[in-house]
Length: 304
Image (cartoon, rainbow, N blue to C red; front, side, top):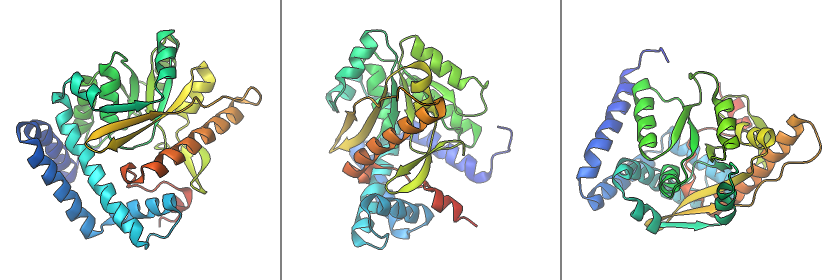
């Protein structure tokens, strides 16, 4: 990325740097209160991000953004979102024992069995709960995996976030701006029997596959479905969420790949199957779905 960072970009990067440096040095109860208070202040201002979150949650709940229940849910959602960042700053200092003891996992046996047999697995996750914590837990329990990261602005923040995730035991590939072999590298990792974990409900390339999601059309990243079709690796949805003061992670059944049809047709069917599972996971924990951006095609098309 060659664009010169804006003053706002530099401020954001400095804030993240200060967070990773200062937050772990302060009492956790104090910093948790501060992040929750910041979330409440932002929620009360009803800026664009909060209004977008409410519009997205209204689709999940099948109601209007003006519904008071959506307003209450968006407050919980902002607190969940800020909890994610609070925990991100503290994660490098958590022990594996704490990550394991506070992690409540369901449905993980098929994943462990595939990996024990030397078969790579594609794990697809929505942006929920603390997906970085879930990754730290997975890597900390002996399952080093490969993921793909969005290119953040400024470049220094992208490198800092990459170093943070690599420090938790992940291999991080850039979504864009790398050597151009990201898909091939992911396929190699899977054929070598290693897991790949990918965020999978928001398409950042405008080249995703169209699916129906909570009753309307959106595009999802093609990567998880295409990897499953291309390599034969099982595609397993995983739903991270906050379980009180702890964390939860629900692995779902493998998304089957159709035996018949073209590769494009197979990818479309698998992607829709993934979207359907995501609907269930998000509906079960809507306050932990951190979607403060436009997602559905009709919302994207309504932009001036």
